[in-house]
Image 1 (cartoon, one colour):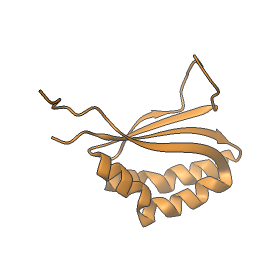
Image 2 (cartoon, rainbow, N blue to C red; image 1 turned 120 degrees about the horizontal axis):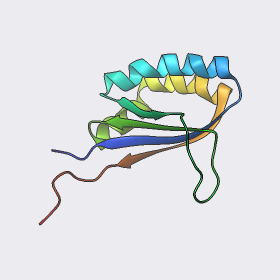
Image 3 (cartoon, rainbow, N blue to C red; image 1 turned 45 degrees about the vertical axis):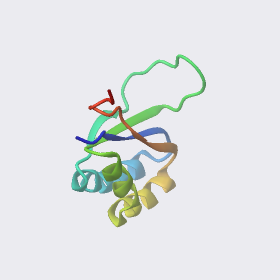
Image 4 (cartoon, one colour; image 1 turned 60 degrees about the vertical axis):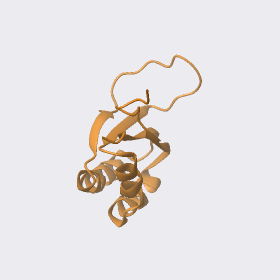
Length: 102
């Protein structure tokens, strides 16, 4: 079994209506690659460093699925909406391998 992949994003929304359009366009892209939102906003505490008002974590079945989703035409169309409505940082990370080496 391969390690899961995750999108981790920190977001400052400047246009809530535009961001809602982004979310509506992005959801089918996530689903097409097996993505499941784990965190979308919500309460948080800054323990170190700087933050943004919104945090997002999307889980994918594999790291490659996470990369492929980001690079897909469907997500890039949604991204074009997001960059008009918000500033953000987004990283794609590989999760812990569920079968650690001996």
